Image 1 (cartoon, rainbow, N blue to C red):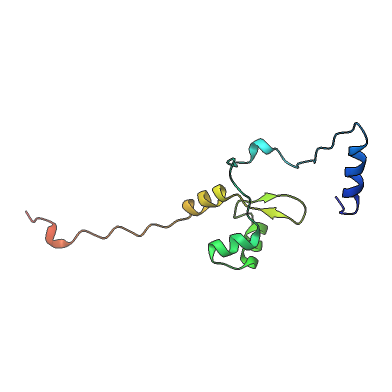
Image 2: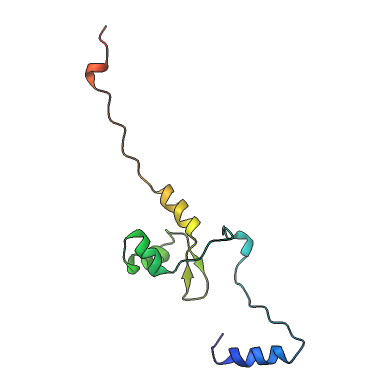
Length: 106
């Protein structure tokens, strides 16, 4: 909504019986948000992950990172989704092989 119309809309609502509820695109039940989650923007996610904003843009275009599309140009990220994504892509170091001295010979 254009910022020009917001004060006009609030004035109309104050003086009428119309109730205004902002439209939320998508189904809010499908979002895996905890009550205290604050959605992060691209700059915050880039700083958290130690990459550039261009890298985040690329991952969003490739649909390789979970995000919430607020509008045509605005995306946000839920911290719980990012933590799950990072844990899923975490690579554990291989377990060291057992030393030959501990293997008994027959």
